[in-house]
Image (cartoon, rainbow, N blue to C red):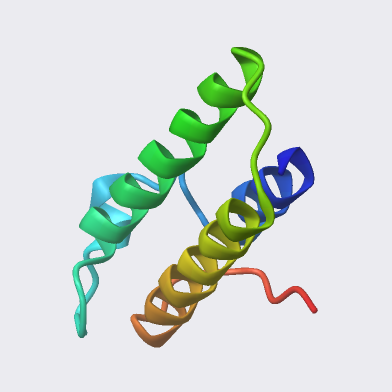
Length: 84
């Protein structure tokens, strides 16, 4: 889980200023997507620090969510990093 979190933090620009998140074209709200993803990652990090052990479904759900957010941000023209 920590590996997935680290990869998502690299691939998705979670620290971009609001002005850069809201560009000319907006098919989905980049600001809300980034805030949501940041909250999900922070939540999981806190849960892991508290000793919670994620299951396969948790890993799959986080990865699927991150992929969808990544794709939406890419469509909005934000600087995302492609990872295979």
